[in-house]
Length: 509
Image 1 (cartoon, one colour):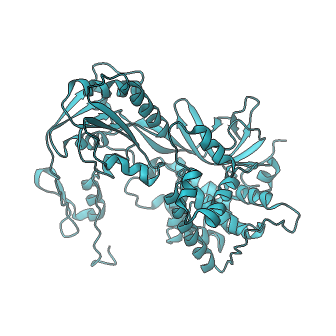
Image 2 (cartoon, helix red, strand yellow):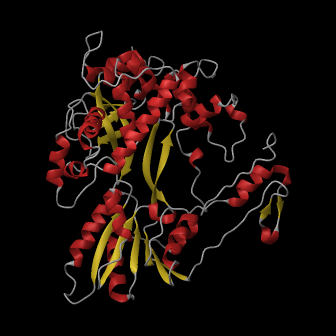
Image 3 (cartoon, one colour):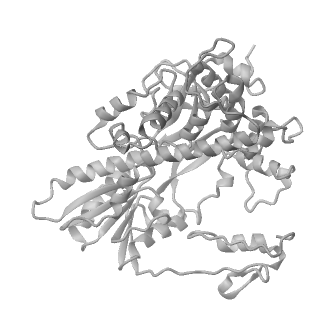
């Protein structure tokens, strides 16, 4: 902004700490304004656009609940029995809790009096097909109360007409990176006061409403004011790679809005060095490091894409990168059709694991299902997500072509010069990027990280669920209840870790 005084930056958010942002950009020009709000002098100002809000009554539990999912379902039927007409929005943390709650509500709704108003429970989360997501915006049938069970996607991203009652479980799933293990998990954590206020506001959009918080008032008072910034809880490798590419070499002295913990910075630098993106002086390597920074994927996947041509599997790795960017939104579910869904998935299954299975899905979609919605429905594939994967792949291909890397689009499976099969080449290539996400199977079928500190379980949606594999790499980690699950899992060999990551792993003598 010092070099470009004519540049105008607009930062917009429903839950933003506006004063902190203004003080950061205004620096010495920041000064207290009316009602204690900061002003930025000639540098900037805060413009507050208040939405139309009806009064919302906030109700708390007298005592903490042991199971907020069960309590949420009970609260739904308490509202249905005692409150006036109006739809209900229930906030839960993730897909498993939402599907379970919808099932419980649907089962208990059958016990209502035949002449009483019925209940229609609808899920809302990112993994649903676009048609299923649009159901929540439809008007409920006559003499029916709609109950929408949603993740925090309904907190600020969408507004649903007719919501009068909100039930807040008090938790949200956030990504958190553990620098000691190098693993980023999706963990349920208490919401902030700002998020709780945003949720309660959903009840007052069209008329006075009520918010039922499934925690005590003293618990609310102890919540943090705002959600912890991502820079303080995430894997900083992508951010540091971008800063290095911008010419900012001294990360320790960079003026962050909120400074990250030193442990996160150190771990990110170690990972980038092991990936070959940084040299021993923490400078960006050329061409690998500069190309990884330019690719619009996280560093581990960037490394696999840039190494893929050496393994003769660049076309396949582009497809896998595009599919993993969907973050599990490849399939959609229909109630009561689990066996049919499992049978449809097995058509695409690859013995080596999930990454090659995703490759099979992509290749079959491109040849058969791209213009055939019925084929996608029959195979429980999310057509909208698959089209997004096609678009992402095309973008990544353009990046590589700009680097002068030619992409051979042959779908034929052929061996490489060293005699390795295409499947092995892909798994070796994945290991060059995801060596930090390696685990070993235990006798009981679970997995342990290389240092043995964390027990992991293959996610039920993974092909490796209840299957044997000695060593694996994985793409994503998520916590549900008291278990830590890994998704997008692929078999590898232990020797590959030592071959492709000698700076990261050493054999004990």
